[in-house]
Length: 75
Image 1 (cartoon, rainbow, N blue to C red):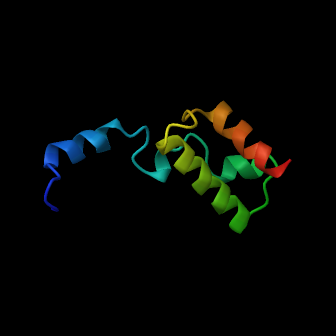
Image 2 (image 1 turned 90 degrees about the vertical axis):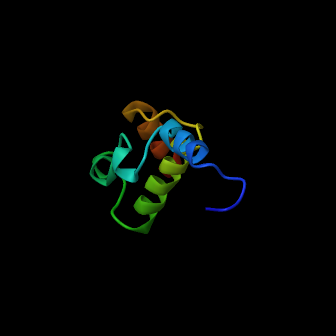
């Protein structure tokens, strides 16, 4: 561990994350495909962007919010 970082600070930051993994995202590739996405790199990029937005607090991790944001990407 680097100097200046306490283990408890790191644990607290981790605990505060809205999702801990991409598997915790309220939408997945199959769901996006059912809503008009085509399988491929763009689908993966969109899921990654949603994950970043949730972790950063820009989007709530709920299905309706994430679907709306994803669909805005393709329209």
